Length: 253
Ligand code: PGA
Image (tube, rainbow, N blue to C red):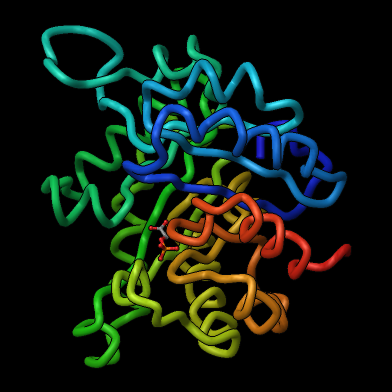
């Protein structure tokens, strides 16, 4: 991500609203040298920890977990993409399913956030993913295509890089992960939709990550089909040892 003309795999630790302030230093100390030529590592901490993580991040990328859909103004409680950047962030997660379901973020809001992030020079990590009912009904491909189409706003082609995270809602924090075979099929469908709806410069080059109950134990199966370019990890990323074990299980090449 971002520095990433070289690394072609990504590992993102999404802390969500976790870790006490005194846990930040030891965590960063444990992982700050872990990024390699092949895997870029990003940490997405709560906003108040951004500067500290950026200061201790070494080769790591620091990411926001969310951003406003405007750059400034009367938006109490919001944080703009430019402010994230000023605090050391180089990427931002946009459209996480918890934002969509718990805070009512529609596809239109997510698209505006994506544009605002690109305009501020951040690499957006756009999350998409279906719920269980949609999967059981066999509508995954159409559902993801709609989310991808809705995110295809003007200005997207100006982004240096966009990362997409496929995070099926039924797999997030549930202990129930997708299988490698399922990912191979779904990622193929996502790639088709990107080619249909996104600017050519991103349709092929956008990295596609998987998120949803990733652990050191299931990483090998998830990468086995070669369909994905890395992971967005929530729960398991709170333990630096587990994050490093996932990194190791991603393999060296
Ligand atoms: P999880 O979360 O790894 O705890 O399932 C993933 C995410 O929400 O990004």
